[in-house]
Length: 322
Image (tube, rainbow, N blue to C red):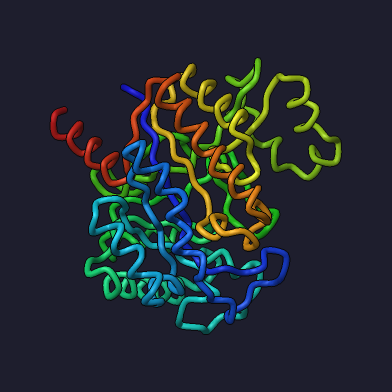
């Protein structure tokens, strides 16, 4: 199968990443700045998926901007849940509760119902793509989105353990698309996370090492990366160079990987909102990194560009053909 790549944008409010989570940080001024990336996407014929959270869906100007992209066939819309800014506000705002899989199941479901309804009201149709905020996906999340008619989830972080921060453990989960509940049900299309280096094939067996506090104290992940034996990376322009992303893609394709997703946060397209883009020069470097990866994927790998919903559609067609 020809390698294929989808782009997912965590479309959310601006807040200070160095401060505690706050219910009052709900500004969405950076949404029109997504036009910077669309100058690239239009040239590559790419349709990104904007997974939209509650402050964005309920801001008329933000919804109008994204709605125009959808109407022109230049974007798709999904849901993204930041629990601390999504009603009902019944829980204490803490770092642990920012992973909504830690909330009582009834409260988590109520918040998912809220964002689903807000997107339906703003865009005229219910979303079928879901992404957990901070990748806080759990068993009760799956039950809730299945009941609400979602068809695709993109919350997975393969080869990653977030338990040290209060989040879920994704180790042992596939890094290619797979059915979460049942064949033909909800398709998981995880963020592309994988390994490169001389011993990249051993990555899945060593995934425990990369989030281990003991291994970190011994500097083992860094030593392995500097020795060029094995490094773990992800497909994102946020904190990952274009060169490293291309090495990751090449390594994973060589080992048979065929579906890739690249993700970033919408506020990164306006300077001053995320640690990755603090100036106009950094914004240009950010966009240049995306362009380099897209060129590499299309021209060097021979890949094509797709969307999360197309991936599911193709897998459903393959099931029917089989």
